[in-house]
Image 1: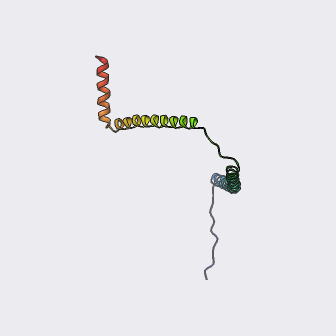
Image 2 (image 1 turned 45 degrees about the vertical axis):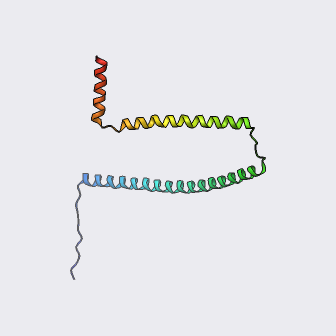
Image 3 (image 1 turned 90 degrees about the vertical axis):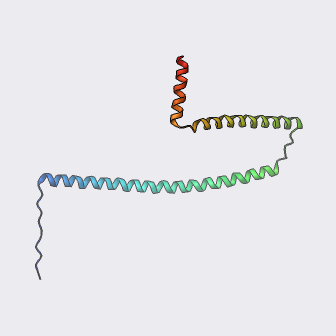
Length: 130
């Protein structure tokens, strides 16, 4: 059997100090990372408990709404008001259709290539100069 001889490495003082400093900085970074991970775990647990509370509140609220709809009497709207509501809805739908047409016109114009758009701008500039 061979006898094992110890291996010695010599460090300069500056090298030893810088490596010791790096080692300590790495330890500090690892501790910060572990603290962040533990804080993340705490926040996840808190989020989970809050989610379950919210789900319970939502189911409770929906049950209350269903109970109220069942218990409260149905509202009867006079015919005059029904006509006014229908007219208002009709006007709103017409307004939306006009708005959609304008948006579609804009989209059609927006489909032009960059070259065509530049030509159009140049044409308008020439018209303004004349």
